[in-house]
Length: 429
Ligand SMILES: Cc1cc2nc3c(=O)[nH]c(=O)nc-3n(C[C@H](O)[C@H](O)[C@H](O)COP(=O)(O)OP(=O)(O)OC[C@H]3O[C@@H](n4cnc5c(N)ncnc54)[C@H](O)[C@@H]3O)c2cc1C
Image: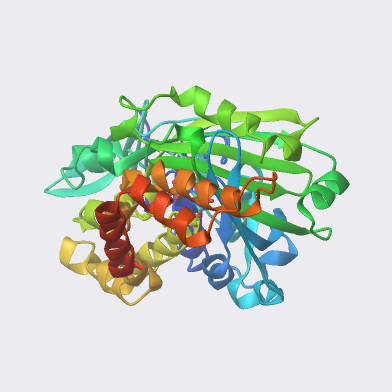
């Protein structure tokens, strides 16, 4: 059994882990990253659109070398019934302004790129090895045990994703509750680059983000997503674990429904399946946050539950990068003070409080309750189809008044339920 000593050990070579490792190594700290996948990016799944603000804070010139697929310039929301969809599309030249830029990304390319930046800065990566246990001595974490190896460090940073069994074993994090976590199934489909631009009506290098609710999940709380890549699309479905039992569709069939839907099928026709993945997503938001620091240990990214599902957009990667960076800044300060106790590491909470991480998690803390409203996935898509179908259908029969169509649709949702939903949405957004 060998025993090595580092300033910091990062468990997990995802975006949170590599953002931390990059920051630590640049500050001259001896840093080791232990990743259980055979390579960084091998185990990581995203939809995926990256809001680039936190990456640009970490690596200001990231756009020159990062493997970005397309810059998102159009947003589409679809309320799907079995045979159709009510689609809202938003596009604006302002979306192209760098301050709010977002990009479609593939983790199999993005994670190795960020890990390489961290390695260039001096971090050491050990891949293909799982950390089984945390080493504890005198009431503090002081290293990791991975197979035969014991690696010691002043601080261990847990960036080990949604489950974070290591944080659970330390008692910092509760076991995941079914209503706080969703299961995502994703495919990457290859298409010719020109075909993608033509089908989605965008210029080369530009792309579209689509989120859908309704038919794909059989009305269960969840939805579909589609992001244009440079040469193809990433698409899939997400459904809350809590609702899997009562859903009329099985989880693997949800993505099939989504792909076969008339609003999606023509967009991916002739495409080649390149990748299939499934992964859990923490969706409990602010309420599911674990303890973020203890003696000799910090928690960042999905391990800390830093994800927001707003229905019309989804964010986790920007939180992962920022929390990884701030955890590293905490370690750098702790090293200067030579204080790795919980009190010394509590700076992490302060840094998060002064960042967008806590601000946005708090701002959207009622979002999980709003997203948990069944009417969004059942009655609303049907009501929208009823109103618009009535307005646009011309078949020689007597035209229906818009107010009558709206009233009839409203009755099917239930006026009281609709009022409740409206109040909830007003309060949340
Ligand atoms: C279907 C789906 C769609 C999503 N869509 C979006 C989106 O469009 N935009 C967005 O911003 N976010 C999205 N997210 C969320 C986003 O992917 C996550 O928030 C992000 O991946 C978190 O990064 P992380 O580094 O914290 O965790 P991860 O990427 O999960 O990395 C954790 C790493 O730790 C490693 N690990 C775990 N345990 C151990 C161990 N014991 N020893 C060693 N290594 C270990 C894992 O192998 C993994 O590499 C989506 C997620 C899913 C599942």
